[in-house]
Image (cartoon, rainbow, N blue to C red; front, side):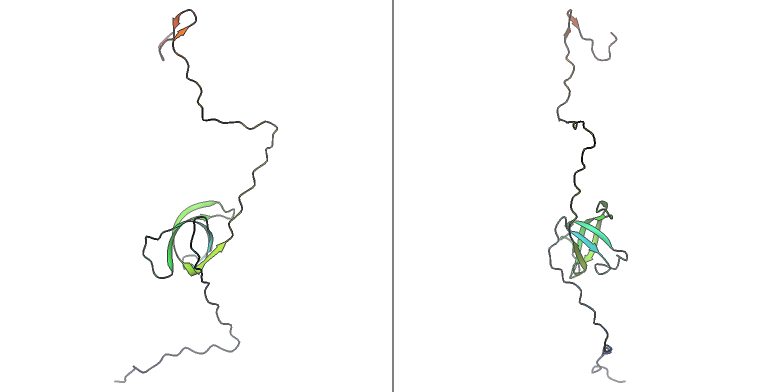
Length: 144
C-alpha cells in the first residue's frame, strides 16, 4: 500500500489577467439600536434577495460560531417603514451599514382652522343632589 503522508495538495495557479477576488469587508463596528443595514448573501446564504433592516439589538446571550451574530431587527420596505420584526443569524463581516433615513418633514396644515387641542382632563361628572325646587335627582336607570 502506498503511503500518502507526504502528498501535498496544490491549487491551480490563477490564469494571468484574472482578477483576484476582493477580501470580504471587515466590519468591527458595534451594532447599535437604530443602525440600518443592507443584508445580502455576504451576510448569510438565506438572503438571495437583499433586505434592509433596522437593528433593535444584538442578542449577545446566544452562542454562535466565530464571526456570526444573532440580531433582532425590523425589516424595512422601500419607504424605510417597518413591515416585519425578525431574528436573524448573520455574518458580521457581511453587514453593510446604510445611512439612517431622514425623518419625514411635518405636513403643512391645509385648512385655516386651528388644530384641536386635546387634554388629559375628563369632562366633569354630572352633579348629584338637589335640583331647583328641592327635587332629588333620580338614581341612574330609575324611571322619572
